[in-house]
Length: 305
Image (cartoon, rainbow, N blue to C red; front, top):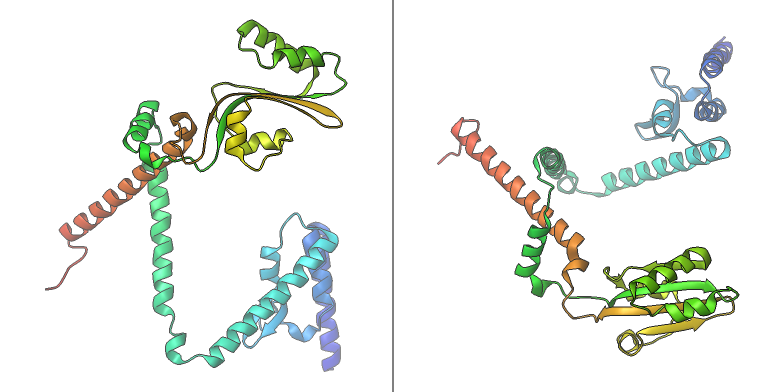
């Protein structure tokens, strides 16, 4: 009679779960159904909750598995995800159990640490909400320039930077000679003509005499070979190179060597972030001071003598 009861219980579970699948058939439930039905029916808990793994008194249930299974996983990916997660869960539980069995009562007393960590998370969440609601995020160019002038000694270049125009063009380009003649020009009309040629024929090009770039970024575009960047930049203002497919032209119109003072235009974004970080800190400190003062004033807290 007992055997028949277990068999009927399995059938009931199968019918219920199958009905759910027919009416609401996400792939993750199908995978979980296959896994769970393949396991012995003795792994049901007291509340008929499906148990996938057990370590000591801790259970990993089907509901928990469904909650963490990513929606976009399908087929074999879902199966592998479930297998990996169950194995990782079992391993973690076994390690925790091993630690509990081998640590002293004092070492296991982590309540104070947990409380401190919990409080730090709560405070951090409050600070983030406060910043989101009240931080002034507008930083004017005048503020950036003033900050730079007050801290200019702090802005030291760690890399070589350049202002450059460069062109990459196929060696079979019918206008190759025209591009070669024009790439060094500083005349505005000639420069416009060069840009028109690049739009039509170049594989890649860059024209901006006002923006600083890392010299390392130019090396990603042009096959320059050098063991001494500083010396190369100082001695090569007009660069012409080629490989088996392309010709490369670069006109360096300005440069600054590492360890020199970084120019303001290169530090604009960095300074803006520094100013915002300073504002965040000041906003949080003011809020904390206000909370403390009002808490004492309103007798929400008492400091005993």
